[in-house]
Image (cartoon, helix red, strand yellow):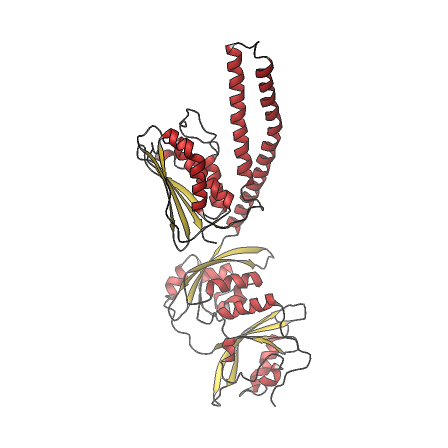
Length: 478
């Protein structure tokens, strides 16, 4: 009897469910989804190419299809073994090919909970001896890291003792399991694993949340490397403690930023009063003040303006990364032309030439105001710390690669000692005096560093004393 669509059957309509299944199909080409009434809800394009599958389609009763197989006696143990279990590993089943011959396959079944009842996800793979993956068993066992080798269909073919310990399962019980049912416990994990595994074998990396019998979840970092016969080696590493420490440090950093921002904001009011009263003192008591008194008022106002600049920089540092920022593709040349016009008086007074890059092939991905701050602080820092050199020159270069842009701001000034290369990016650290003889607040490069790192890039400096300095900034593509 030919299976017919059942009335009232609704295929999967949730867009997120479709995306999840498409992600699964990127790893396991032969994939079928059945509802609690054993009606077909979805099947992968790869499964449709199998001989004898053409009678299965969304809405048909899969049990009618099974009863027509060459060896229907295989169905009873399959049903009885699945009863009361959430998954079934490597159940044998023979399909009938277009030429009438049997096609032996193995099925892995995973039961999933959904709003409309249980769903059964069926992973199929052709039975037979897997091709050699090129891994030596003795070497695999000697590795301290957990390693799984999977075939082109996404099934585990090798597992070392370390993998058994990490996954709390004997290594032999890991064999022949679909990698998604073994490691991915939710839609986000499936999507992350699919992104790393889809397409031709390549080096990739992802992180998953993995449950353990104790009930705690662990974070597993997975490094993927290609093997022969389109297989892959997955190295698993427990990074739970590292990620927990990173989250704790991140939370402490956020709290510190909030505290700094609040403190800087509160300091503004008394500072405004200080500047106001010193101005009144100068205006109303000018005849009373002698030269020493006026010098003292000058010193008070100078200190207050320095503190105002410091408070402004502290607020800027605390605001970096706030939700209001809008990263976009920005033309850096437009920003550099604006800065060149603004800095022209300072550059001319110092006798420094500013060389800007030529036309770029693409734009830089960053919040515009933050990119302005990066250029402004780096170029301003070069002007302030150039030193008395003839023919002063600051050159800005922007190079592009397949991962992002690299910005280089180089000068031919007094350079920087190796011992200070890391220190200058720390808050309140200013090496040497500026061109006007004063010391800076030590905030400019700290602001640049935080902007760049929030964007996922990095910053470093090169150069030797007397040979100028070269600041490098990398910003990744979107």
